[in-house]
Image (cartoon, rainbow, N blue to C red):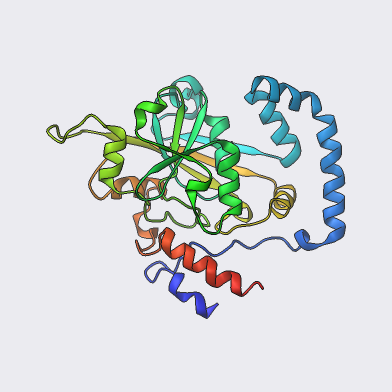
Length: 294
């Protein structure tokens, strides 16, 4: 892996785009057949819940489906609030607000859907614009697109005023890492400010704080590189899905956005990778890495 040293942070030693280690079970035909057989049996048994979820959007039904199929679990921690005092209505993400989220897996959108108290919208920037995506298009973009062309999957949103009825999650890195660090943001503070306060002509100094949500999925399910849906489904069945969700206290919007990035990195500024390891660097990494897989 010496040829990939350009994509390893010199200060921390972290290589944020390297794929996580996976189980040897994934590549075995017999295991795939066995897991596939039991998966289909479970699907049949869960049909009533699937129908209810499709007709009503019930998150309770969706939670049951995910638990039975993939052993899905979520551990939610609200910073500054004792666990016994946490209520979904008061402390979970609500409509009309914007939350900044770290980006490490195609499953992040499903987790946030379960967490949100309303209809979720997923936002991904391309350095100039912010695009909104449906849950399914978020998964497609994360798993399929090595070009990292977000415009193929979403539509441009001018400002937050268009999103007053939804729970809004901004994946400000613009692309996935392997969960070992938070990538440099694919959006500057001025563009973010204009998105949040479109009517501010610059005469009023804004006092804006944003809430961040830190997600952590078990390692093999991080998706820093494109992967086929079949392969990823096998990983979910093999490893099960375990999420830790930390809803952080609001941080001020500053010119450098450093406070927000540190908060997304679980408060550890010493494990932030260089700002050269952003989305453009990842495009080059994907190009080089794919040559070794041919």
